Amino acid sequence: MPRSLDGWIKLLDGVRLPVPASAHEKVRRALGDNRRSLRDIADLTQESPALALSLLREANASANLLSSPAESLETALTRLGLKRAETLLNRLPAVAEDEIPQALRQLQLISQHAAQQANGLFASRLARLWQEIHWCSLLFLSPLWPLLASHPELFATWEKRVLGDGEPAARVERELLGVPLLRLCQALAEHWKLPDWIIQGYRLLSEDRRLLVQALHIARDNEHPLHQQQQLDANPVLGRWLTQPGNTVLLANGLAVSAHAGWAEHHSLRWQRLTGLFMKMPLDGLQQQVHQHAAQSGRLHARDDLWHPAEALLWPWNQHRLRRGPVTAPAPTPAALEDWRRQCAELIRAPSPFTNVVQLSACARDALTSGGMRRVLVLLADRNHSRLLAQQQAGLPKEAGGLQLDPCQSQVLQRLLAQPGQLRLGPDNMAQFSALLPGQLKSLFPGHHLMLRSIALNGRVAMLVVADQDGAPFAEISLRAFAKTAQCIERALASFARRGR
Image 1 (tube, rainbow, N blue to C red):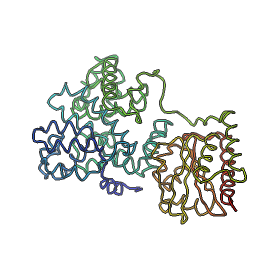
Image 2 (cartoon, rainbow, N blue to C red; image 1 turned 90 degrees about the vertical axis):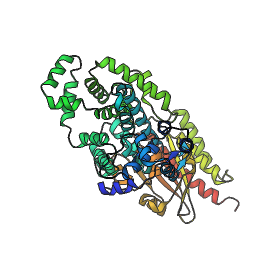
Image 3 (cartoon, helix red, strand yellow; image 1 turned 90 degrees about the horizontal axis):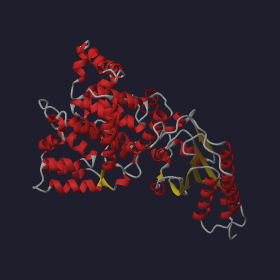
Image 4 (cartoon, rainbow, N blue to C red; image 1 turned 120 degrees about the vertical axis):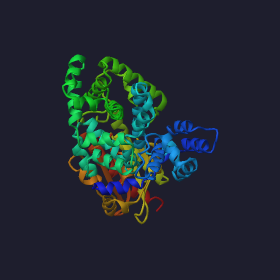
């Protein structure tokens, strides 16, 4: 991955975002139907934020120096024309929704939640600007979409370390990307000529936070609106800035992103207070509206495999979705250990009880899970060590079953295939080795703790086992069980190779 701002812009500028096939077909038909208005086409495009971004980028890229950036999709469609918009649509990859990286779909869901908050809170108050408010809110996080399309593992790592473990975001982003995330978003927004409200929001967050900090300080005194107004009157520069309609985009996304972490988090409360100051509303009244709009967004946009903050509105207020701190994974139960012993005995039985490698690897998978591993992937190496093919998996998404890895693209895999060995990843060495692992593998195993073990047959590596305990620190008994299971798998491979002799 790049480590510089210019490198990231060059890489992300060339990423073609995938579009759900269903949304792609609906918009394609609408573009060819002369009975459809631009408003109808724009509304249909909302089902695919990636398509909306592509159309807006294309319209602004072709605008001359005298033209201001298109602030809404209707304006973008007018500039492009329907024929050119259809040509652009046909260049975008149309795929099944479940084939789009989960991290990308999760972030786009947050963007849709932000647009819902913007519509509900601000669009009726600023009716003349409702399109700008809606589309800028939906696309505010769009500079991150190509990042997660190409490196989806980054989202789970950032979420776990920053939102879950409370690590400083700046330090985590420097480790993962080499550059501050907000600075990258601002640079991409400027490069793509996104609407000014989006660029202003990132500029405020990354370069000029003085006004924001002052406003947040006043917003804390939400129970005394008269005193708040007196403070704003005493600072006319801050008062004028606070009334700018472009702030609605930043507020809506602040509410949506902070709610993703938790409604009771101090970040969420801070954005709620600031929004209440902007709208001159008491905190309890604003919270009621924000929760209603979140529930509406959940009804419209929620998916079974994605997280929507509306779900947490039913939980106890102090409950957190993300586990905090390095809590050690639970040890396997006595019943699970008994099952582990039975599976290991089956592996080392002679002569080999297995008629094919699939049966052997399935027994190995079951032994690893009984020993305490929550997520397991067993990969077989081909004769030339040019490919690793997933043979068995447990606790992983269904797409893990068809995973193929090219060892040439990973120094870690090359070392593990050169000779049998083991690599244990933890917080002390994760940053060192994370960039050397395939992105597909990291996206399947988000977290700070991971085991990789290569297993040989007659001195040549034949199998690679990847396992963890949902990214949590390993239980000591599970580590011992993992090591013993690897020895049993090695004996099982040797016994299987001798069968029939």
